[in-house]
Image (cartoon, rainbow, N blue to C red; front, side, top):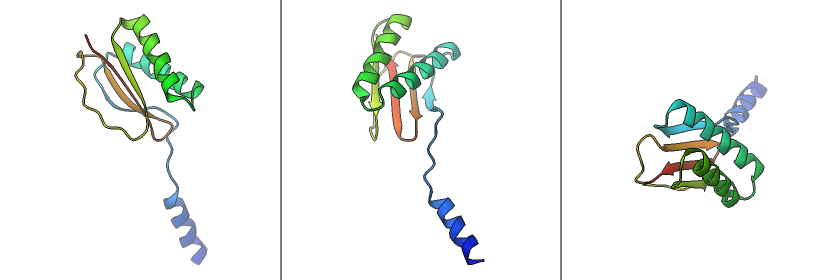
Length: 106
């Protein structure tokens, strides 16, 4: 009986790490959102130790596919307040605590 209580406590103490993207906010159309999420996941997996390079790859690809003036932030533990072109923002979490913010200004 005592072992059951300890096992449940250990289960509760485990940190949940999401391996799928968790979209917190987006007003992009479905096609653009899906492409941006896949691009973000790929870049962050490829450059898992270099967030600056991941952000650069995401920005350059979004500029080519959806027009210029995209901005990207990849990192952990940041806050933001941005002005953006409507239908052009995506804020998501990936691999637990890695946040990705994409927005377009005109």
